[in-house]
Length: 52
Ligand SMILES: [Zn+2]
Image (cartoon, rainbow, N blue to C red):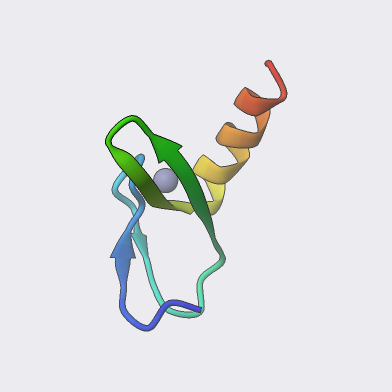
């Protein structure tokens, strides 16, 4: 659960505490990355990861 409003790291939509969202943890060449995505971007990401 978010404690503060946050912007989706992909589209910039505001994610408010209590909204559904996705937290993505990954490793990039520069180090660990963490992204918060709104529901629609999380859906796009899962389709991307599925190879669509
Ligand atoms: Zn988004």
